[in-house]
Length: 125
Length: 451
Image (tube, rainbow over all chains, first blue to last red; front, side, top):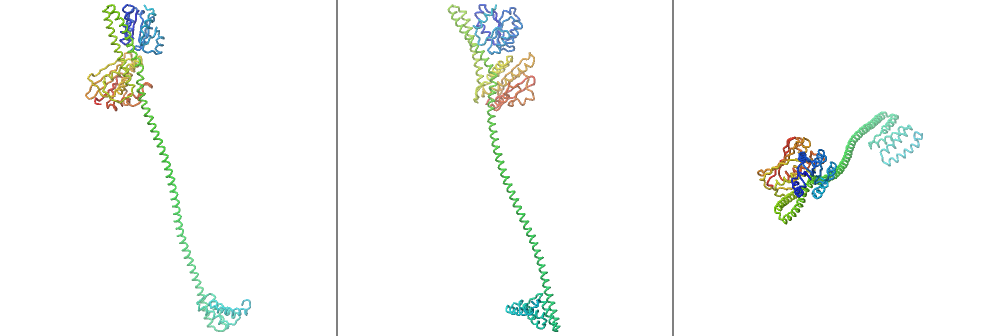
């Protein structure tokens, strides 16, 4: 399972690494990190097996919001799966996420067990 | 009787008349009685007999010094008697005497008439004079009456005027009282509205932050929760490592646990700082000055403003440049109020820089620069943005209440006005700005250290 986590908060990377430490250790999960929308797009462009990735992105980010990133990803790589994560549980963002083809929507504080079960259901390689 | 041809009866009656006249001793009566007898006898042409009676009648008058026109005529009759008896000289004397008497009498009458005329004239003159005087008096009286009437009228007018004046004054006083009350009511309403507005301004700036604060608290709490969960899992792993005698794994996990606890501590403090900052703004001002670290206060407000704006506008981003003078000691200020000023100006700066970004090309990077400087007796705070600047036309209005360039609903127009009051009036400091249209705006606040 290949995951790309996009969040402007640096500690999100450490948190994911901790939460998925067993999966990472066992090689079950490969994890990439980007701290902005643009760097995420750059990263995706640079890797060949990008379609195997699932993008987990925060919505509230500087420069490019998670919603904008979702639109661009879906425009560039339509098969790529995207899950939205944010502190805002508002209906407008949920609606926007669904309209733009997001697989799911999670609010902070993240329930990692729920996230993991969702990821398992996505049948990622 | 004589003329009725009854001379005898006339003589008898005349005799009786003489008797009666003599007894009466009235000269005029005596004269008339005797001359009547003379006349009767003359008529009977007894000329000679008639003479003594006439003479006796005249004597009576002469003694009494009475002259009448008849007296003159009777003397003429006596003169005729004398003439008839041939005594012409006596007749002539008497005739002259009679003429004299008649003239004298006429003259007397004339004099009397003249006197009467003169008297009448005098009387009329006097009457006229009196009349003139009376007229004059009447005129004076009339004039007096007129003056009195005019005086009365004037008095009435004055009284009416005074009454109207009093009434009007009373009415004006009532109106004034009413207006005074209205003004007082309006003032009270204004004061209430002012405090409501100040409260609204506080709440508006707080409201702008609320969503951002919620987000910013949510993020650290998210880390606290998740890292504590992971730490719990790590402890379980560490127990397993000890049981398995896997010392290396144990050490690595312990290292991760320590990192997690640091993260929990860091994010806990972050949440704490946000909540404290929020309370600083929402709490009522106690007005109490406390020794405050200006660098911390400024930084706290930069964080608050930044996160608040980011929460409200997902596209918002700004580069923060901070230059805090470490030599700055604590100064005595009302931190809540100074905090409001800082937040307000930082919000404005971010708004201006972000506004320029929205209107210009994508390459424009909004920058907020905050700095402090330790001057001898003062502390200087500078807040600078690279937005579009303040137009010269409005530079003298920005501290006026209700002045805003933001669209309706975005600003109350009270922020800078309140800031001015807080800095200048409350803290005896200074607030000014430098700006260049299209390039930058920099607010410079100086606060005295001995406050």
